[in-house]
Length: 492
Image 1 (cartoon, rainbow, N blue to C red):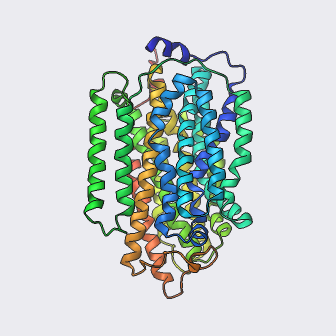
Image 2 (cartoon, rainbow, N blue to C red; image 1 turned 30 degrees about the vertical axis):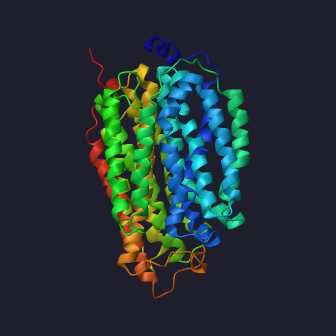
Image 3 (cartoon, one colour; image 1 turned 90 degrees about the vertical axis):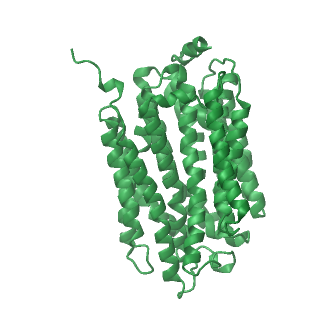
């Protein structure tokens, strides 16, 4: 089965691979923006749909959960039916469910629509890296992967900015309605510009899919609802049951002699393993830091959704300016140095940001650490993606891209659940457990009562330490990068 894979992974006769990559990145950018775009609309959704903070966090968690769980099997489906067609099908599902999200009249309907939207995203994501691997020759693949990584990094930063503008001009529904015309354009461009690639059969690991799905759902559901349930016996049963099922999933992957969902031997490449751990930490932090920051900005500072989103402008601008330089350094600088400096800057910026999250701090005190976060973020996404795939054999390129994306998404899912837990814990610790139960006081542009504001700000400042610690873990991880093979060629 490896021979057909070897043939199809060589770059086919694609006249304009960059045009195809551009078409793919439109949809990829859109689905990644939707990972973080909801954060700035949280108070408006809480008010209009009469939902609690935890329920609104499920709008993101449902998306991430149905995004992360099937992403591995979707990579195999791309090999079986062709990445172009699976990508287009996912794009159609994503676009249609975006319309459903905008029309949702209750929090339950919105969460269900976001779950379907996540499924569409799962169908799309593995096809992007797999297509890059197959349409670009090796000498140009690094630059293409750098663009893919930069798209991922910038998208996570643009989400809150776009969300703020859309909420301010049209209401929270428009953070989803805007996907409809963009999705239609992306479908047309991908139909015309992305080549149809060869296919080959696979044995699908349905038991692995079931185990990973059930295990992840139990773990996330238990964590995110633990505080509301008082950490009762059912909560702990879900958490430990989820961990046990995920352990069973790993055991099955090691025993499966056909085609396991996760070929564990891919982790024998240290740089792939380190990159996977590091990107999960970045995914965790990228999702987790948005919620406390936007709640603080809107409910303590009294900013509108648009004004709150402008706090992210320094991050996006610095990241955008630094991205071309990072692309040039990715092939020349040891990944340990580049990503180590990046994670260090990101971690320092969030520890720094937690300090001025008070009632009366100056605005520049918030903007400065956000600019530093943008500089660090620019040097995380693209270098990690390039380093993860650099030493992986071509016959494992598809599996590698699926596993890498899955670890990133698992980090995001756990980050979303963990920040929900910590928000509840810190609000309760400060005597504010009922302050986010929904109602008129949670609208964007309003604020919590003055007597509660200092305690609310302190709670959100403490929550911000969680993504900062995740970035410290990422920093320690990248210190274990080894020298990539393209840097160890004999000099004589």
